[in-house]
Length: 114
Length: 116
Image (cartoon, rainbow over all chains, first blue to last red; front, side, top):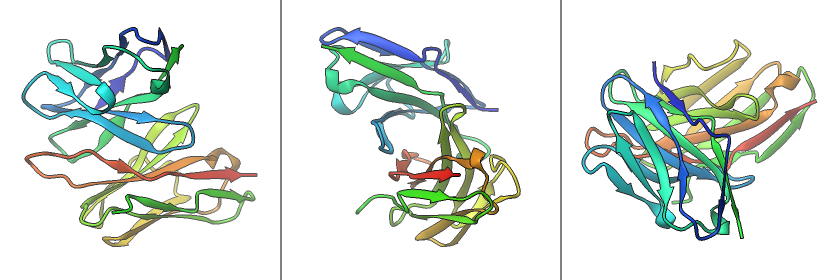
């Protein structure tokens, strides 16, 4: 069965500092991995995805994520955080066998202080 | 394209009433997903369709919940009868999935359901 774990409920970082939001996954076969962001009272917005190829994936708003197969991780990173990055972040995984069910993690709230 | 459109944005209903949530996916997308978001359980996949056919409804919590997709541009999620514990934000999402790019899902703004 597919599963996604986001071990941190909240991440606090100062503006200008690098940020990391952690994600680990479990899936049969090769994973398709996604990061989404949710602002208050809004739907989820796609940030980036890993399908195949380079382990370092670059996405919207300066975010990037690194796929690590041996550690089954897909951590979200940004070199310099902005106050406007404060939001709820979701990691998601979809397997490439048995359908295209996308499972989301519990979410990590990022708080960037000025 | 206007994106995934959900209606209503907010719904307040009394326990025992029937509730119908609506979704219009992005034109050309062949997958449609219904999710429920609560503080306690996070984002749960309820059901998804491929080319209007339900593929996996294992996330539907009870028989009170039903979903249909009569055509490629419309889907409904119905709760009958509704209960206070059904209060949540319900999201619809659509995607175009192919073997090459396997694109991401696009989400609607959600319907905030409150059952009193």
